[in-house]
Length: 441
Ligand SMILES: [Zn+2]
Image (cartoon, rainbow, N blue to C red; front, top):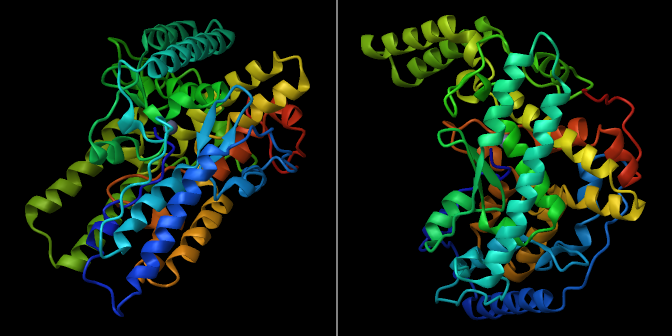
């Protein structure tokens, strides 16, 4: 599932007419224009970065190392010219144009991956970057297969073979967008998604210009979803593993430990109790429930009774995404570690390890977001009063997310406890491991 945070992108469309005191629109216009100019300038003048030193093996420290770039167009650019646009900041600069009383054109940047509406299928750059991405996908897919093969024993060989067959059948798709709203809905931030109906990994166009390692880590996570503890029992590509026979049950129980991610592992009763609580809360706010609604809740509890073993780790069943995400992260961390261990030059290994985490940094690193917001606030000078509320929403997206959707577990918990727990990653990054963290093998 996507790494991206859920944000109400429509917020600024409702800004008009809400201003309490009349802002100095002229000054605001100038400030936002300058902000756009600075952004454009920083795109042009971007220089190659080196992988920074991450002190402790923690996502927060990794993010801190990117802070100096957080008010620029790019968070990172490597020696091959592959880039990670500062997508959170770029989107904000675009959105705050709604604070004005007259239209200000969009900032005209040249990077087609930062502004994928400009991308066309016939574009040679799109073609070459797609070919590179497909190669990375094939590598990642082959490595996941190898990982599964390495876990095979007399007891699980049938299930492992079923999983391998599914992994080998996964296709990759890289759709392009012509409609801004659709792009916001499907790919507001760079990322990818596993579509179990078609056994396909769908990659957002913004990913295509990124460093190899960033693409590899995202794709291997999505490939991992094909056999995550929910999808493993689903009929995908004509086959499914028998319920209860997940060959990775030991990994799941490890991920649930506090030294690891502490992934939630709800019992049947806990899931039923949560449904009952929801029913009670519903009745409290709406008054006595109709027999039909009551029957609906009863039916849901019955489904839990009957299908607990099959669906217990599915996000929509347990209302928790820990196990699915944790497992996909584990798959990604394992193949990434193996890949990094093969890189003999320590500087190159460090770069690869560093770049592997860059994809979601613009939208998930607290320090990067705060610095970007600060820069926006300087330009707004209190002349866009609604931004204060919007800021809360930007910083704590989960609190504002659609309650019908199950939020992803916090990224720091996933990175610190799974990826940065791998000895190969720690060695490559040269970071100090957390003593309370242990790796799941
Ligand atoms: Zn996921």
